[in-house]
Image 1 (cartoon, rainbow, N blue to C red):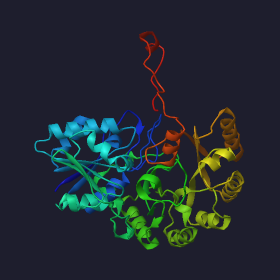
Image 2: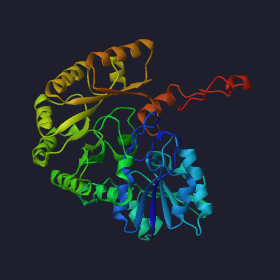
Image 3: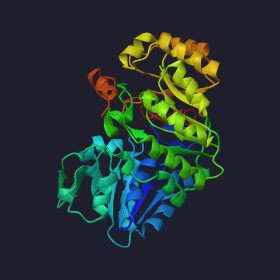
Image 4: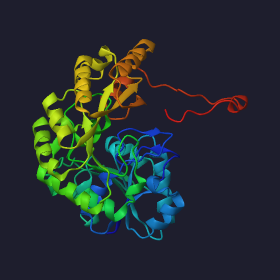
Length: 414
């Protein structure tokens, strides 16, 4: 079976699919690699990854390309879901035969029943990590025998038992090989990373319990499963071979520094390669570990500070204090490690004063670059359940009068 792995056409300036951990419209060009799709595509012999937003492709372009494939796997997200359902409908209706169409990602993993009910064009949902679920579909295994699969048949919806999380991550293919085969790597740009950059996952899952974080609560779990350092280094070498002009490699785990012993082993092995690299971190890494990371080529850390209010930090279960964050930041500055600091406005118990606390704290620690996002409660997260219990969900926008339309704009996101 020939399988098309599709990051579907999106809204203008929308970066919410592929490997993005948050959904946003933005003023600058910014795209993450569709890493999850590339893992699965690497297992399926006859496959292609098509990243429509990064390649600036519209629905008509995708329709034409999809005609050559027997199955289409669409990565979808909560904000883009309705648009992606319409894409599935058009692909089904315009295809010369009757393709199998499925959806993957955190949203359908949590809301599999609702996803299948959204349209008869959607034949299946591959819940959570879908690498081997899609492989078994492509190999023709009976659907009632495939773990992690929800599907429609004869007007009924069936949910098979969950698939276990993958433990041997070394057994998966290198996504960088699929990047080289299917993607235009110069279409990917993150403003705080050196250009051109390549993104690699060295593990899946995160032990932290932050109530708002999408991936560990809905998709990859709270146990940090890692590839061996040897396997990661092999992919780094593969990256340097395939993309000789790469300026930076970004290790895009949820929290790369969650296992400091492994970080130290990684530093010993990556240093001889003389590369520039960046990654994610919590604001609690020891000075000696940071020093060794810097010495092995680390340029920048993406750090989730989230708020400058201690009460909100406890409410969201961040597991970090403001004093820890201050000390960590001072250490990074002393070592010459740049910081991209991320904050969230609108978390539970937020008010004018707590926003001022965050502004004051951000000015105090003075990260090299800063990102401020609006809190988004995604289905399947503790934050979403909290919002339901407290009655936070309500109609936020009512239709304006014709007179108002001439002077107001619809909000770009909810």
